[in-house]
Amino acid sequence: MNSRDRVKAVLNMEVPDVVPTDMWGSASRVHNDLYADLLSLLKIKDSGDNIRPNQVTSYENYELSDLLGCDFRHMNPGKPDGFTSYKDENGLVYDEWGVGRDYSAMYPTIAKFPLADADEADIKAHKWPVAEDEGRVRGLGAKAKDWFDNTDKAITATAVNSGLFFEMGQFLRGPENFFMDMGLNEKLVHALFDKLTELFIDLNLYYLEPIAPYIEWVEFTSDLGMQNGPFFSKEMFRTFFKEPYRQLFSAVKKKYPDIKIFYHCCGGIYDLIPEFIDIGVDILNPIQPRAAGMDPGRIKKEFGDSLVFHGAIDIQGAMQGSIEDVREEVKLRIDQMGGGGGYIVSPNNHLLPDIPAENVVCMYRYAKEYGKY
Image (cartoon, rainbow, N blue to C red):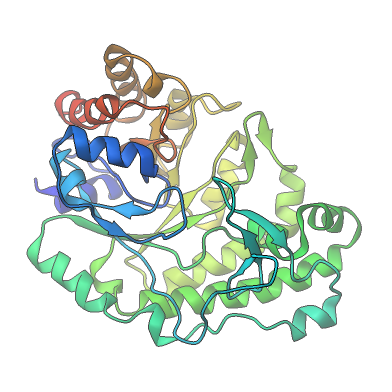
């Protein structure tokens, strides 16, 4: 099997020749410091593409991931022509949603929440992003076709928006306001989510159109979990989030029936997994084994008939240890999740600078050695 055949087999719940491996997607990027270490270790001279300026995981480099045996290429949306980020007198940098961020520290911090004092009328009047902007898609169709025709890699797409309803609710209203809204102002939350649903659908359907013939899945991200469990109850998920998610994922599948839904959701979200299946999730990432309830073996046993799993390699412990620790971790997760196919090896979040570069190389190469069927 080549890479594309291998991934298609997994997505069809069939057994591949060897487990696929992934790097650079929405939840398997490499911190810039570790990235530099990897280039040095592997003697790679090409610095790669800086696709996320001002972020701590800025780069993609397919010479690197191909050298490690990875099976993917990842499409990313372009920047809109109709909006250019700008800086105010306090040094905050604003995005097209009106959110202002402070980039003075290692990680950007949101310091301006544009709908912090909003009512329903303000939500309607807010200056929202324009979905059909040529800059978002310029050149993407040709790029995807080139990869499809001239490589054997599986091609996927990062969604237009990083984060969905939970994140954007906080970005726009502020975390305190948003959580209080869910308890005291349900009508405002529903009004905000109605608008966000409309926008997320329009943005992603427009973006996917030129690349749809070539891609396997689109990657949506929204972190509903903490280390010890979800941020809110299952009942609250059903009250506020379930229907907007269903509408978004259904819209994608209706227009592009061959594209699968990849969903990244950090933390201890075991109790929400049946809800995710119900709203149309096909691939679940990242499966964090140290989070509450997220035992990969149990999750595979209970939900493996409905979901493909992506991730699970522990970056909170094993990947920081010895080479032998890494090998044992890879072996364990393939044993737990790889039976019968349905598993793609990847770190359970971005690879950070506390992980030795040698361990990253070991993880990917040993997965291909041990993960043969």
